[in-house]
Amino acid sequence: MPEPAEQSTPHRSQQQNLELRSTSEPLELLDHTGQVPDDGGSPAGASSSDINSMRTSLALFDIGPADKPVPAISLGDHDQIGVIALTSNDAPAAAHTLLTDHGFWRPRGVFGSILIHDRYDHDVPARLTRFLADADRQGIDVEYHLPRIFADAGSPAAGKRVEELWRDNQQREYRRSQRQAARIVTSGSDLESLAHGLSRWLPGEWAFHVTDFVDPGSQLDFFDELWDNACLASAWMQFCVPRAAILTGPSRFELVVIDRPLHRGQVLVGALSLHSITHDYFGDDYAPHAIAVPSEAVRAAHTVSRRLLPRYHQAARRLRNPCPHPAPTCPPSQPPSPSTCLGSGTASTKASPPPQTHRLIADRVWDCGPAHSAVQDFPDAPIPLLEGPDDAQLCVIERPRYPRQYLVAPLEPEGFKPHHFRMVDEPNGIAVPDDPVRAAAAVSRRVLPRYRRAMEAVRHNARTQPEPPHRLPAPEVAQTFTLIWYPDGVVGAPYRSVPEDARTVLYGCRFQYSPHESAFVLPASYSTSDRSLLIQTAVRLLTAQGIGVDFRHAAPACAGPPTRPPTAAPGIQPTAGTPSSARR
Image 1: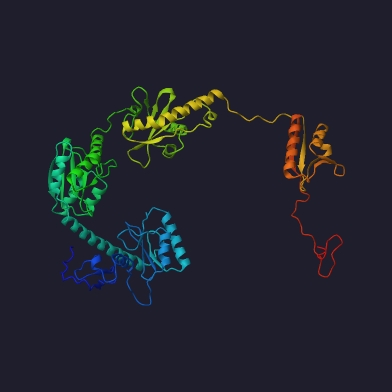
Image 2: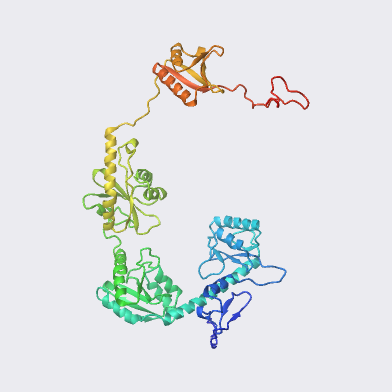
């Protein structure tokens, strides 16, 4: 239902009224004309930024009884938007900080904080649980009504409050859009003159006519003719388009021109669907998206000829001839005839591998970047292979999440052992567009030189080192004894366990015979570095004589934990072997 016409009253620059329409509707600063004043009509001492901050920070809750205060934060659930958080007028600064820390954000033109979520996202309940726990820990009062997320739905009053305020916000945004649309209509460019200039300056023979949309129904009916899913489709659905210019060119190509909403002096130029070809034009990822151009005919024609028409012609060729170079083994979703990328006669196309060999090809991808991960993460994607001279092979796959792009990566050559690829840099793959000519140029310039150098390095390693450099085992020894590391730091061995041929070597490496211990010992008086050097020298000399040396820590004297020495009772002198505190 259209809004009632507001009565016009003389504007007074010094007097403003602050009108509260209802307790559940947002507060707006209105002048006597019923419009939100601009900077010139602001109250004395208040700027436009002050008014905007005032409009977003005013209390938006029902006042309610005095004995029931409004909570600092109210949470509600919206079917299409997500979780909506609203703060009261007296909410502390910590409440806004808490909302920001837990992922809430404020879109432009919306009061309150919004958290977008999916009902199938299992992380949202956990995040909201942490949010409620942090709010309870900081003493911030939170009231919620979330029946789709929590088993305990909460307070229905909070859900009703959030629903009413969100509806008020949508009504305010709708009124603002109507005012903007009215200004766009009144300040729009002269489409007829602009279309006449475009028909003269665009390449080829172009004709034009202007179509008026008298009602929203005719505008929505024309939406099916658009070949766009970006700015033109968004403007067509969100704003009132009173008229549009249609240009018809060679090969029955058609362009549409409308005033760009919210941008004075600019127009949107987009493509229309092709005649006699049934296709999902709105959901096409390869659609020739519309562009924004100035409302000057010469500059607009130059921009359209340089940016829009090439994409339009390419998309039209793709629909009229889905595979310009058909190959019987190439699926329609793959780049047409991949063998043309490397020139005629130098490459051949192989069919996509069966599922059981997909893993083998994924292991051979000679890449350490996105191509290797794409092959590993998407095992069901077809992989056409290109075979070139000197056993060169390339694989071509669609680049995930990037339409109209492909990944071209080299494969490791067969017949070589793993140690042949050691210390050889991967040639790595690259991302190429879906144009065979541009893709061939990029592969020839960036991939093939690196691939040739890597292949030459692998062949060189195979010639110089055919077999892997396995580590040799320890030499065989006729005798062996064990050096023991004792707890006091001494390294030694019992005398009877040391072979006779090894005693001379130990004497030469500063080992000493201790008669009362009946062992060869290396005293702990030597420094750590000196002992290490002497032990290494002894082991090297003994190994050369065919005597093996083992090392082992000495077993502790007692397996139990160390016990504290007994302390003397008060008034009893310590024993002779225990030093007194006075002597200490």
